[in-house]
Image: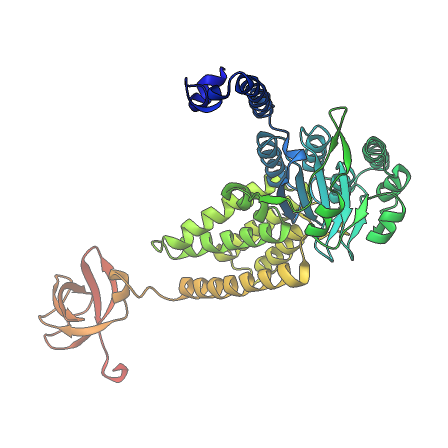
Length: 466
């Protein structure tokens, strides 16, 4: 680009530097050269590609506060992709979990190990934990950190398919899981020996111990302090060194989608059990009181959500059969006179089934709470069901009081002479055709003893029976 084009005022004849010729001509040349050099430098600087977000002050953030399940796995995938599209910005995972599903855990660890962006896992806030599945996620991060008063560990595997594992199968699962966490620790340069002990012996440690044992990289009071501590830290990403620039970073917080929030909520055994019992109660009310609509719709929706939770959580086949048996016995109580034996057996079977239907670790929160959830829920359903069953049983034993059959035993008055040939009676404010095996005169009191189609069978009411 020519100097005269950018600065025409100085290059017009008789104007600017031209009037100082020949000395002005020399100065004009020097100024043009200097300005051209400055312009070239500006153009060169502006053409340089913008640096990655890892070297800019930008950090993406997601919070996992609950169990590890398919919803959290999908949440991580979307958050990593968003950070990648934003110039490979670091992704901060604030973690507080009691554990979760092994398949989802393996999927999340694989995403972190192969992530195109730096992953920072922070066990936070104070009092949080990275138990069981959380241990794998924490140790797989590029940067692992914990807040004061937090803990990590207790990663021993449990069965996920029904009942206790056999000795040989348990040994195989334990060996595979131990090798899995050891490989993660070695790849990130962390304490593989302790990681294996967390799997084999369910060991758990505090934040101070984790820092001393090289399980985590640092302990930070809060998120802001963490970002200041890791600023300038170098991590390996795709075989290359990458320096983090996180101090005073702008946090871009991600939220779960609506569908993922639903899956995340129902992916706890306590919620799943309440959904099942609520669905069972809603359907029972709809079948006993047809036409209410709302209980039936709510019941079907609850059962569908329970089915979705059953697809996510590890199921125990023995528990499922006990639940099914309990439902059958409760329904049978309505139609079979058992003096409460079927109902009692159904409640016991249902309670035991729901207690073990989800095969989850005994030491974690990812299991049905008996006293705070299951017992009061089953008690409420059983009381309601017992009252309804009692009412239905009594109604079945009572004589018919509606329709034509309800006239039997009702008294009225003969309005014509009655015999086998028929006549008229007045009963419950209506005229009826009637017949009688005995002769009844007009005006005498009568009582309905049967019916034949729309003709009543009546008898004379004795004077002493009035």
